[in-house]
Image (cartoon, rainbow, N blue to C red):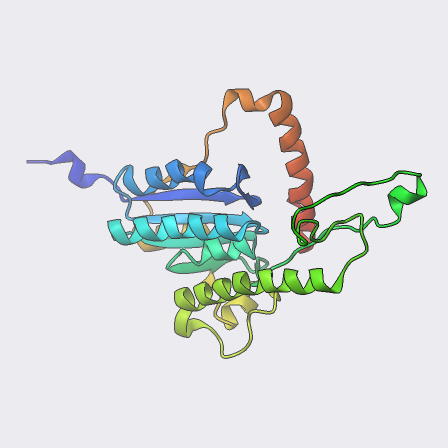
Length: 262
């Protein structure tokens, strides 16, 4: 007797992780939670593939998303593969390390294991136009890194003390996930590597593209089910549309830092 469901081809769930990582917009744990849950539970997938193209962003959101992927992978005993497209830098690489194997293109940019804070200073601008700025605080650190005041050495020192534990957590995470595959050198300076360079230093496992690699592992008849966040109808209009436009400018600038246009 023929049992139809035994003849179904294997399924691989694909999660697209494209763009900046940030709470409230872009890639966030809140927006991706239903996507990730659905990918691991729907159709009994043999594996989950992450299609990553991200310049990074929030370290907290990166950690939350990666942790969710790992919890479900361990609970369901499903292997995870990450496929880096143009870029997996900073938080984008944090997401990639949620996978058991990381695959890159020959030209993929990978790494940037560091923490950055950037802004502008305008200490003379408002005075030039005869504008008086009034700031009153309860607490000496409330005007920390005020862009309309000259940069203070004590503010820079305090910023460094905030960045260092975040950097340390990032390093610990990469070491825990990549282990003995990492080259015995300092990979945590914020440097990036391209394609096979990333493989040589242990940040990636090989050169491969998603479809042919999944066919190689699971057979030519493997079914790929893509999962992505659903965009609400109302988000296309009004303030949300303007916010998305501004976010798009920021995202293009983040990709451009690595010589890539999204």
